[in-house]
Length: 187
Image (cartoon, rainbow, N blue to C red):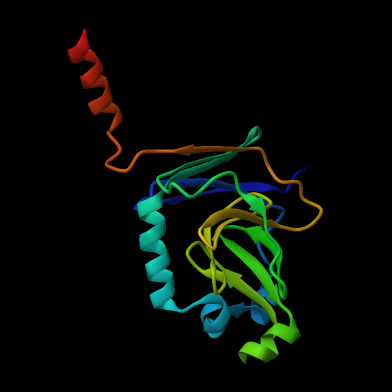
């Protein structure tokens, strides 16, 4: 019997829908050893940084959808293009599951920033480094903004998905009803 499960995370304020799959949620023993992101603000940010990241994401990222054909991203940031693969020295993605991503902070980096080495549980809007913020959790990786560009963090063995990136002009996105009313008025 397949024990995999699918969890859909919906962030209503951002209109973000991302499917996530995992073999299982983290075991209770793993949760005890895992640190919270706010216990290492030098790398992962604090509540003020997370709040600012959320506001920025909500203003720029309309939605992300992952299916068997790839990942679709609709956004309003003129600088964003297809994500590139990103590796951050001293911070490694361990797994993505049930609304969170687990990253490992190496001892070398941890000593330099005065944090505990080991695993940290991160969520959307947390930082992965000083200039890298999490935008969405995907099935096998994390979509981030790194220095103003879209990037993808995953383990080396995971192939990058096919990206469909669509930019929308600035302004309000009309509702489906408004668009239908406009079409009817033309005819």
